[in-house]
Length: 279
Image (cartoon, rainbow, N blue to C red; front, side, top):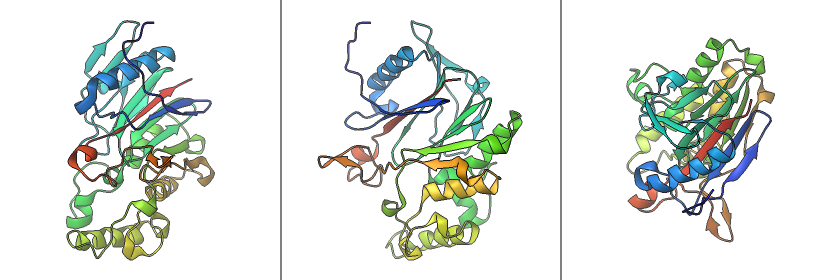
């Protein structure tokens, strides 16, 4: 293969059932701003790992939906048998076949990888995928699923899987220490207070770190708590140690982070999360 570009180097996480490739700085993995490097990088790693279908839903609506592969109507085909599937608004996808893959651009929002005996579900799991903010503030639901975790469990059970067999891995998100929603914020303080009170009442202290008034929300803790409520054994819930806000090497940040960004350009930059099923 002759390369006309230098592929980004991923941080790799491997297990028996999935491989996870995480792409951070200096490349920007927002398809809207940098479609060329995103497409070429995905092609390179997909073809080298035998991936034939990459499912890339749009997660911009935070609609807490998980869809089956048949929902994707747009197909972009490349030489070598690779197809990128797009054209659906959803936060997650059921990967139904061996060597199928999921791609999502992300900055601070964790990605959940749920594996069973027969399927893999990969999903974008940011704060607004886990909590229906409209319902919290107005009492009226804005979507069918309260959380993307509910949608994952729905599809998992529909596939004939048993809850005891579910393994959940949470990767590449911001940690609580740097994900702050202080109740004394001059602009958002009142809304933050409502949000924090909801978390304490509904999910307990595991979703917050330290003084609740500082509003340090643990997305890992919230995700785990929601899965626990569905009966997933606690020993089956794992998270990596990545903090997209603070991780650095030689005083250089490793990941893009919306919470850390100072300019609109920085706020639009994304990490790339690429997950493929191996069984």
